[in-house]
Image (cartoon, rainbow, N blue to C red; front, top):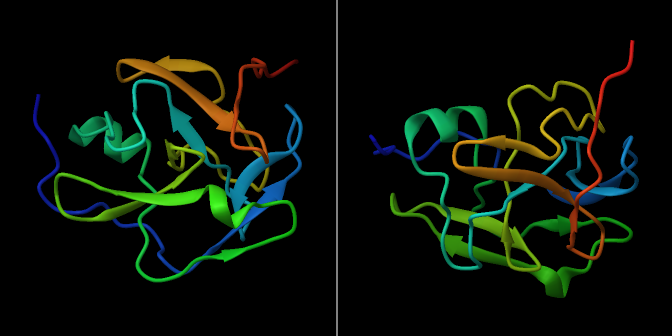
Length: 138
């Protein structure tokens, strides 16, 4: 399994907000992009390291201080250092990721899917995994 040798590209200038979604209020970026947790992660280690995983699930990388919107608790924000030296934002001990297939604010197409060796979940404003499955009807 190959690992990523250079940091993935994500936009480090953002704010954390709460976004409405089909599974309820969730943690998102200031532009409404849904943020995900990878169940195999720990507060100090990302398990999404191979090229395929990082491509589908870009880690939310930060440099500097992030802004917080209403409903987001700054004290739940943290960071961890990835093996490539980049800094990934976490919330309530969950390293945060985007999902390449979410293209509109509030989309949760990666919710509760098993991919890259574990389950992916959106997070509630309190930083807890939401296990409600998301299905597309029709």
